[in-house]
Length: 48
Length: 323
Image: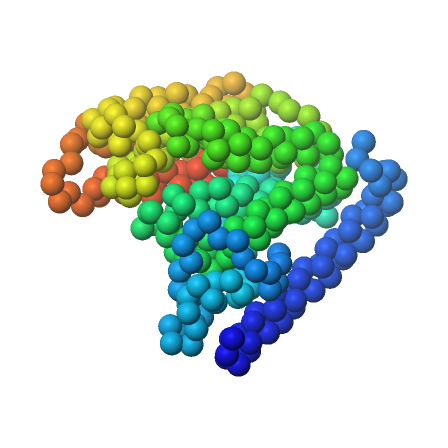
């Protein structure tokens, strides 16, 4: 494997890690928002 | 998504766009290069997803119940994720077919930019996430229909029907017809006649839509060995079937108005747009292509059929909002 290959692999891993971090953060925010809404509506955190 | 996992290709590895040939051998790089995140996005068939999301959203807006925006957003997100997962699993299973068709050979799997196992893991993971999130955050009825639609698309359409029968898209069309039902169920927690008619509309719209496409990409399907109707039964029979399926589709499209399920806005829009659909379909049904024919009427019907569905579903939602 050439240094160029290693650089490309690292770049791919880095961009995937960034995208995954953003998605995970968005998911946490979404779950938080859902929880707040369900609490405000007096609904159980599970679906009826 | 195994970042640097050694790949287990069942397809011959192909050059990766990120590499120039002298830098490393094709076989070597195919074993070590992790797929780009954009390739995972491409697996979800974003363009198909847009129609699915739109019909799901309109099904939700047409429902006679209010849904909290956060819960509504979650439901639409789950529909999008479920559609994306089904698309990924479809591409995982059909990688060999996709490699034989010009229209699909640049997809991540046939182009050799991703290993099949990553696509399978991604598809199963996103499908599970979409159904679980829908069940916990929205309701179990919507989650159940979402699960059914994913399984129908992957197992019934992709695995069972597509390579076996020219009726593949007739029955398989049900998979794409579920979103309005899911959207409605997300808002109300139950199923009613209007979303069932919307389901019927998409179900009956699918054959003329796909057969119009199949008429002008017939060679592609024939090369891949997919038994689409033009390949198996010929062009004449396909044109007649397009005309015949347009009739019940028109009935399903217009029916909500005389049944009192929608107002006159939807009635007028559905009659006008369905009449145009009927004219385009009639033109396709009554002509035969010559050698070197540009197939313009078929392309026009295919393009219009997409707009038609967008307009009709937009009218359903607008009709409810304005009522």
